[in-house]
Length: 287
Ligand code: PAF
Image 1 (cartoon, protein in one colour):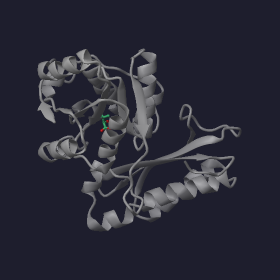
Image 2 (tube, rainbow, N blue to C red; image 1 turned 90 degrees about the vertical axis):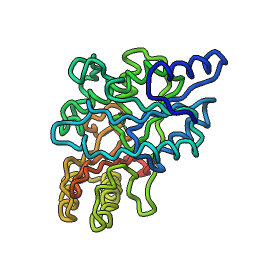
Image 3 (spheres, protein in one colour; image 1 turned 90 degrees about the horizontal axis):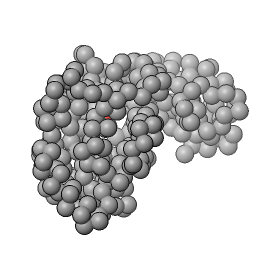
Image 4 (spheres, rainbow, N blue to C red; image 1 turned 120 degrees about the horizontal axis):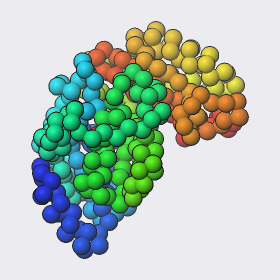
């Protein structure tokens, strides 16, 4: 696996692959890779000839007071993991390469509506930063396929919406969340948890399962959301939101909506954990 840091070197490799007629997948990451990221690489490898991963801690998607400075940067280990997973090229640009006009001078991509709810309501500007960097990476790599984790459910929906709205010629693939044996969704931010917090953390997913089961059994979503929020608080979480939404547009479900998703964000110590679970209200099945 080759590692490149600048756009000219990235384009050299990509041009050669394209000239040879090879299909190219992009796996964007912020590094500090875990098994969830490597599952994205595996899914990409199963579909195309060449996989490009990116490692860039994107400052545009962090708000004031968030963890931009402390976000773990582990490029050497990331490169080794990616090579072992069969990734072909790693693009690890500096901020100056990505935003030569500075953070505020860069053209931005904004997906209205969907970017303002749930995580977007608590983290103003976050999704604008995400869609801006992903649009830039799409422009740089021009992949046939781009792969994202379903753990970031709202992010995945926004990227699909952006690609459709801007007629970007790329297929977006979502990959199921990879979990620890106790159910905790893998995340780079799990490293912020103390041992005691780590022991409590799987309760987030358990609470989502209970909430989905309650709604599938007929509980009104607002009541079930309230109960789940109380349960998380009692367990020492600082819940940001717990919501039942319909999958098509993340709006509150109408009584006839069956394809639902429960989404939550909650602080545990200094870690902001997010998770979600798709379920079907009519059949009660979790996906
Ligand atoms: O999901 C992430 O790690 C980031 O939001 C992404 C998609 C790599 C953009 O910086």
